Image (tube, rainbow, N blue to C red; front, side, top):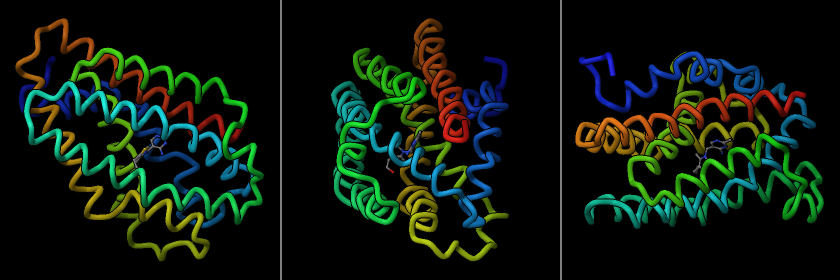
Length: 222
Ligand SMILES: Cc1ncc(C[n+]2csc(CCO)c2C)c(N)n1
């Protein structure tokens, strides 16, 4: 790694900076803040995104299992409890508002982009390697914090519809800020102790995740 002035988390982000910024500045982000997102786009996005949660919770479980000490197990368990309760209702209420029928909520046909992301989360979980798991979590969470919590966007009034407004506030709040800061501090903590090969492996997971995030945003417009 070339940067000496920053920790492992920031080195990883810099290694994917063009895809990272493309996500933060994506058309989807501008449109959800403006409240102008096309319902068909939002619907494709939410239907596919809802299929994340299953593998995502399994990935959290693998991070809990592979952590090197008790404190991170507690933090990750508390986060798992939150996302398996509060977040679920946003999807269900949005599906009601958008008229998404039951089969499409529960078992939609998965796009290649969704399948690729599921596969990545599955591989990271199966590796039972804490740095790999945290690298993928740091993208899935950190990128969402960075698009939702931009200072310039926070000046704007929230969009009127809850489907837009709550998807922003779910990812721009103090609890989520704290969790993302903790994920980054975990990467900084464990990164320096890794072998070069293990650090490269974790970096590979991180970079693949950022690429897939970008493709996921793009593909709901296709
Ligand atoms: C493609 C895609 N990438 C990341 C997230 C963000 N995310 C996934 S699970 C989770 C935890 C609960 O908020 C968060 C923030 C997403 N929704 N969709």
